[in-house]
Image (tube, rainbow, N blue to C red; front, top):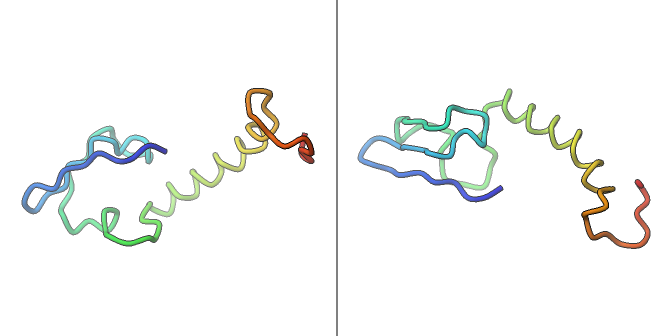
Length: 78
């Protein structure tokens, strides 16, 4: 995924790329919202994280065997 685009203004965070994470296209939230916490952990809401995992599980095998994808000669899943 491409990077996020958000602005912190005072006690608010304005996220204009939230739709790629399953939210509304633009979110305005309190600066303390845990989805925007610093760190390396996944801050997605559990339902959105589960939806993301299902999507990856469905699409990854198709991508791995795609003729447009450069892959090693020994593609065991294709």
